[in-house]
Amino acid sequence: MRAALNLAPVMNLQSTRIVLVNTTHPGNIGGVARAMKNMGLGELYLVAPHRYPDEQAVWRAAGAGDILERAVVVESLDQALANCQFVVGTSARGRRIPWPTLDPRRCAKQIAAAAQRGARVAVVFGREDRGLTNDELQACNLHLHIPSHPDYTSLNLAMAVQIVSYELRMLALADELPDNPQQEWDAELCSAENLERFYEHLEQTLVEIGFLDPAAPRQLMTRLRRLYGRVQLDEMELKILRGILTETKNTIEKSSY
Amino acid sequence: MRAALNLAPVMNLQSTRIVLVNTTHPGNIGGVARAMKNMGLGELYLVAPHRYPDEQAVWRAAGAGDILERAVVVESLDQALANCQFVVGTSARGRRIPWPTLDPRRCAKQIAAAAQRGARVAVVFGREDRGLTNDELQACNLHLHIPSHPDYTSLNLAMAVQIVSYELRMLALADELPDNPQQEWDAELCSAENLERFYEHLEQTLVEIGFLDPAAPRQLMTRLRRLYGRVQLDEMELKILRGILTETKNTIEKSSY
Image (cartoon, rainbow over all chains, first blue to last red; front, side, top):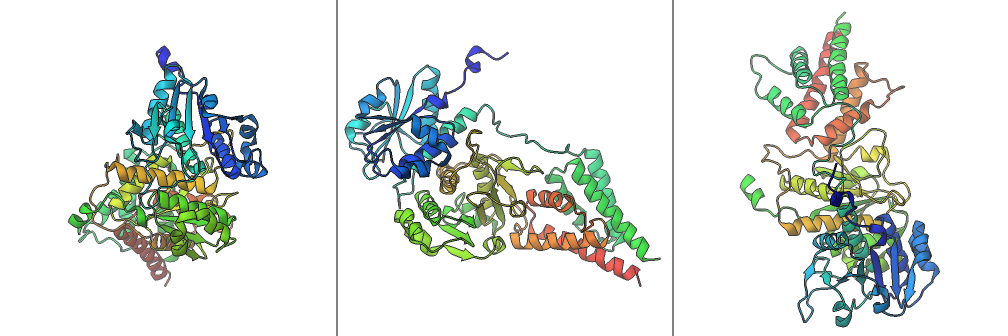
């Protein structure tokens, strides 16, 4: 049994709200909807968009039309944030007054912590050209900065939402994704014993075809052991490799009659 | 020289290659260029794009026109990967034969580890509608899967590149060592081109010894590609494996006289 706290989901992605302020291009709104749905987010608020609804938004949303249909259009940021308890604002660096600013990964952790305390969370994205105003940023608990390259810092709006949504999803999945994922595989790993038998079989064959000179073996078997050792062969692969060795021998014997 | 290698940064983002295969919409190519430049990547290869150059690409690239201008257009994936030593292919889940598959974060670590060993790295993205073919995926050392929500798994191409580029940038900024630091190695990683030649040689030999029936190949070559692809062969090992194939043939021919 896991502790009660651990039974609760880290974060309800569906109700983590994305807020877009004064978006100019409806295509970007569609791109945002798609990015959200891809990552399991569901709640979109639009603060005074320039052109909305618009067929470009629908087109770019592709299979995420339901997010657009449910999107809530409001007149002011205050309205969009009315019932939220933890608000993150996306920001370029270099504001006059320093604000707690985190990259998307660290920010996602703060969001999860807030959500775990029962907070309703919103992440606010600004205008394509100017981002959020200082007043808008000061309505936020925390600022988020995507560490873009100094040569070209201006991310497309939907791309920025994609990155933040991705980080939220990675965090939500963290429980399911162990650090060393033991992947699904279609065959068992081979045993050390069978691997040794393969090496013997291999060595014998290499002598037979004249590739390995027992009087001067050099590092050949060492290198082959390093190769087949580090790949972690499964039993099916081992069977194939041994089958190849067997057929090599059979072919040589047949040929020599 | 080893010492010089260790002084190098963890990863040269500028020369981490992004390869797009058969892209349909030129706007996506522009979106990819922008995503790359935002994250500090610089090398774009286009394999037989449907429409390129195209003004939609330029428009979507916004301030990343220089990446488009330097983009290399080639006819085949082989050409795009010719001098690469570590190739990552993006993939949806559910291939018939499981392949080593990581999420973008863990994959970025593997890329950094390969780069640290001096490998030239390519990350390959498939068609908007169908992704990469099984053959294309089998040319890759590792598969990358973006853990999208099961309700809507299909990411826009530029979004997928954005996420992967973001992870590479986060890693480059973290200046942290990968989880599984690769040790110093005594030989260069083999190129994708030489690996392909080995597969051809191997297949030919397997037919010759009667282990592979061209009329009923089943999954044999796929399994062998998965095996040799995931081990990241070095040039010395490749030379040994090809030497074995050559000697096998010689022995059969000598025996039949």
